[in-house]
Image (tube, rainbow, N blue to C red; front, side, top):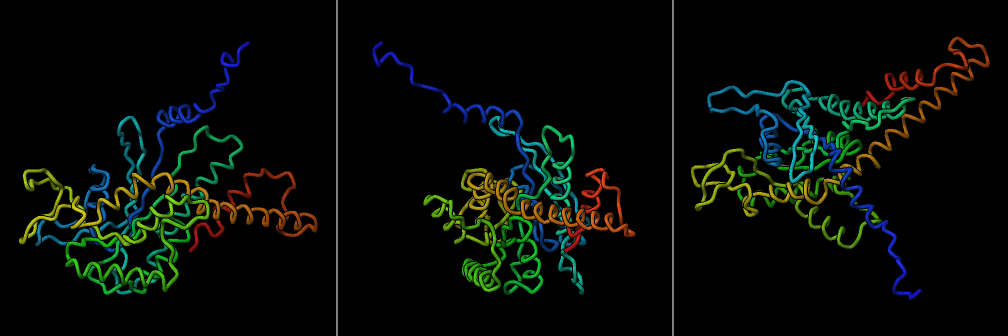
Length: 340
């Protein structure tokens, strides 16, 4: 048989097409938590990023109105579809912190919520009969809103950022950056960068030895932009004959898509077009894995204590054939997953 008649093509290169078909059929989860003071435009910005009215703004609609505030952690889930790709998007709005005279521990509910999502996922993973598809409620990104009126990171910001970066991917943004001049914005961003470095606060994206040269260049350009100075708006207006989303001021219009006015486009592209997969993957491989390892170690220690107590007939002795799920649930409920 002539060599040119031999069929050497195997076909395993179609695996990406197979995976794509399944992925498109199943869709994916993306969960974002919003953290910052009241009145920073958190709801408006996230609605602008996804070009959908996902959550209602608590901001004032008129100058004489009393400022309304988010009073409890409130997740909102909607399914969005774009070019055949479905995303089950959950936005978690949190109560504004830093609003009180005594802000001690005001970050605790936020940290607890994030850890509780890890715990819920772990509990579903450890079930004797697991669901075919585990619904992922773990937080993949945290948008942390900085007040443009401050002189830099406040002690409260430093404390909260240190704790948040231990449990999730933090993306700092300067809210309502149109309240500053270009010079003020540049100086403020430089100051925030210096203070993040001084306090050793590492935000997303993280450096990785496995990154390609292209990834390193891309991530370096993103780190230059952090913190993103953003302006959000759901209002559509006409500017130079084109319809844009923007904010109208006495001196003119801020076009949120104009890179000279705002880093909004860079933030949106970063979160959705270049690093969406990384945000989900890093959550699973870094933050959740650290939580999972810690919890399983505690479960192992608890069982060792129970076995030792059973051997000595101590007061905390348990039957050696106790259902394995019981100590897991016990650790979930009483161990540090619910503490800060």
